[in-house]
Length: 331
Image 1: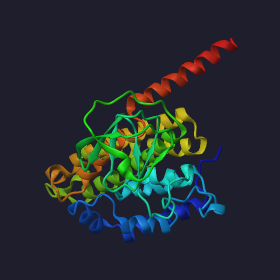
Image 2 (image 1 turned 135 degrees about the vertical axis):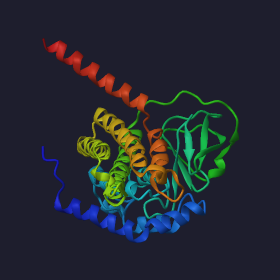
Image 3 (image 1 turned 30 degrees about the vertical axis):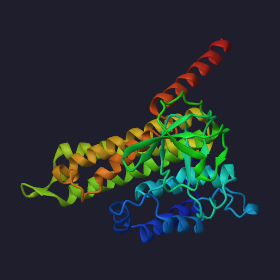
């Protein structure tokens, strides 16, 4: 099987990188952050016009008609620039669910209702999609910025993939969380897209660390000449490339176990690379003006979305047991 990107895929990735670099550069990202804007509606519309959300929607329905591998390439670029907002949920609502009006063209922001878990970007969302059954009175925590703001409780039963529109169907509550539903195709696809964002972040922090190591001097030499710094940067590159291999392969096969493995590796790469990037930057990396801490915080949040480490490990263990049982049966 050939996992090399085609010319069209490379052009798609380059086009998205050019769009995000030109329209959502560091100044715009920082301005949105300082203003407390969870979702930049203008950028959301531009992404919709570029086909970001409708990428997997059939051409007959006004979409681009591409597949999961192409989506992964776009989400990798979004992760590089720390593009905020519920990108995966809106993308899935447009291409997989297809029931949320305005999601495909960027006119609607769609967040995820996952009972017992943080609901990110609720304030900005026009609709919610449920990853699993939610009982009346079921609870989901609301995430606002980097802090848990309150709890919400659904006012009616919600079926899996059922869109909640308008948002007044979600009301305030203070109950404890409930057991999580099992993995579904929608959850797995969301996990893979989150892994792609983590991959983009891991690659970006590697670039940031290498650039700083070349420019920052101590004792008359660039710090990149010191063996300890070389080792940190080398480890970052290895983590990012191992995660890239896993994420790209899972995008092609769409195998649940491979997606679980890709999420684990991408989460590890994003978190550990951000930490190592902080170390390479030294005290400067901990300042608000540096972007390193933003990558670390975002990596922590994504690691808890769609498919957590414990759930991914259980999925991998179950797959290994299944394979072992099949092999034993052949003996």
